[in-house]
Image 1 (cartoon, one colour):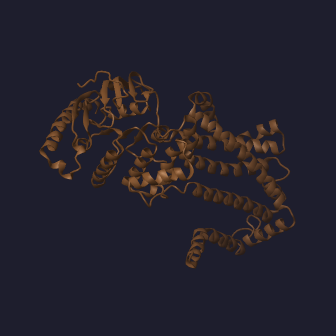
Image 2 (cartoon, rainbow over the protein chains, first blue to last red):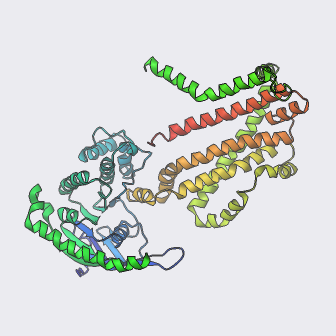
Length: 274
Length: 256
């Protein structure tokens, strides 16, 4: 396991130390979703959390987001310990979570308004981010009028417009079709190279993780632990043919073996439930 | 806008309400042909004539206004109180624990059963009717608000929080707009209940209002005028519902 000796979070992007989380239902016994997770996400890096469904990777992301109460352990960013949601940690959800009663522009304006910027200046910033995600011309559309891919572009624009240092992405392309997903991955990388944000990206898609990330942490099946963190770094290469290089495919294969063993470890447990 | 659009719209409305027209025609026919006794069911045209008479002699408008005033007052109080209670229950477990069982116990009780009690407590005037309408309309408003707010996807609130909204702002700017479809459904049900209780309470004891008019005309055997009053209540209820639906469509135009 790759446990970082506690470095100051000002240097690193995010430092997670001995984080555990139990979901306690109103009745019955709790489920241990995260078990003593320690992880350092380098500042400005693209860090993927990879693992089988239900391994706690989204829980870990929601803890970093400050949405779940911290039960054990701590999380620090350059702004100090995480104790709740904050605009320095922007989030993109799998199901977009756009405000359906607001147009694309109004959605993007929401976080800009919360920064105290209004009027023409706010509209200019909104337009910049709408253009950045290629939604020009759809400013007045409601989310229900857009395709899934376009909704996720709008959600990304809304999050980026709040100018977070850290971008937390929870399987953001999981609900999209394969072609759209591929295009969105390329565009996300292009945007990330421009903005130099720290990204934590949750996915169960091995190739997606290898394509996008500097570092990939493979999580074990429940209870979630960090099983291994490996370096990738193919994201620094703008050549689209990078995905066919042996180094790329070897890494995908290696990680797949790891993930597969975790999925298989789950199976007896699933059988006993069924 | 092309003129063809207006024409098509008129035709659409005609087609939608054609069944009502057919009922009016059948009504007229069966009474004129003597298939139904004219005292049990006066011909539709006679009812329409009595409607005009009631309108001209100044009976209908003051009574309708008296009823609508009671209905509007009771409904307005129910919307104010019900949305506050529903929101309190949805947002605060403490309020939910305190008020929830009361609401559940009160829910299945037919509010018309409270008419005598409310009359004893609040007298025979407007207050009793307004209280009754308020009580009847309260629950659909509470339930619409409560279920609407409880059903909002938590990630919407999380999104707003991570974009820099405070908890209070999340309630106002995210939870209420997201719950609006269900809140409006509750209000629509409440509007229908307001008409029901308005007429029911006036039928039992009142000295004006449409319910009173229906009751007293019926007692005096003035059936065409009674039918005209019933049709007036129906038309007002229908207009209120259509108006409400139009406002809802406007507010919810973001839905696909």
